[in-house]
Image (tube, rainbow, N blue to C red):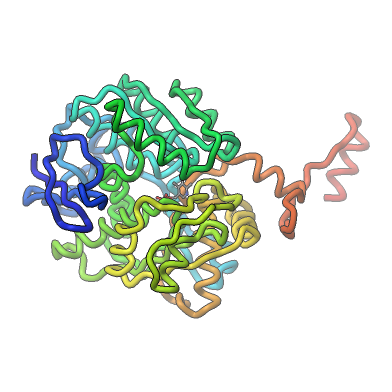
Length: 421
Ligand SMILES: *Cc1c(COP(=O)(O)O)cnc(C)c1O
């Protein structure tokens, strides 16, 4: 096959046919594509009109840049092809004339995780694996359960008990994954799934898996294609385990190094204040200090991120910044994104909260072209929405609360309610 697995820390190369996620030195592995990785913008555009599911996928349409797997191994729904929205309301909220939002919640299972999972499950099939596992704050497990079911594989999901949004837990159960609610946090679940996968010969599909990153790179490619191959000034996205910002950076870096795009965008990674180990390391220049994570944005409630090294590489290459926002800022931004008719889950809206802070601080200026990534669907976490609109979040001023009204089942009462609204 025409790719290599290389340790991002020490540069050692590992055979691709072997199941391995980390180097002997502990570093994560990078997929490095060979010379066959050529694809023209014209061909990528032509595939948009194809009827074949591999061409139609927003991941495999770019297969030469992602992973040149034989097509018989590809498990696709097909994913990607998400919309890029512009909103005046959100733009004025963050203090810009224009802002674009790439809505990854429009993927088949409702989050960008599908882009990584189609690559990871296809690699599992190519390697001949029949069982897959992941630890998850919810969306990874929802996605893995769906792709594993489609591929006829057995799926094991490790979730922190009581800390995952209902929409996500229900997907894992519905798609038939064996779901273990671990009495601990995400970082405990992660540690256990790595041990169990190694000892039981189960294929691990967390973002430590190098192929997940390859699939998620396609967010960068699709943003470029949506913009007729013009590079934006900024990409803004939330960071939890840090795989996604590492992936998007890798996608842009590879196209830039191949001379396909004239410049790189800058990247801004937004963390929740209660789960911001990258922000702390970035602003102090110190090594990663794992922390006990706490935020209502459950998808980014991670204190010991697996892709820290990869993320730092991308931040350095793309002249990036890291910003931290609190839960009240996240909920306020979410209410704006929702009220704009776009809607996304809390972690996704950290992008918009972070963007607002960066405009306020003068890091991002009017006239710059900004694409914020909305990572997950509004309905992933309906509890958080209802709680907001009932003003039930302690310590949060629910400025846009849209309270449900109780009305008797009579015409006069209904008319009165309508007239006073
Ligand atoms: C997984 C996830 C994130 C965090 O992405 P990382 O790659 O872990 O940094 C953010 N938002 C949503 C909705 C997610 O599912």
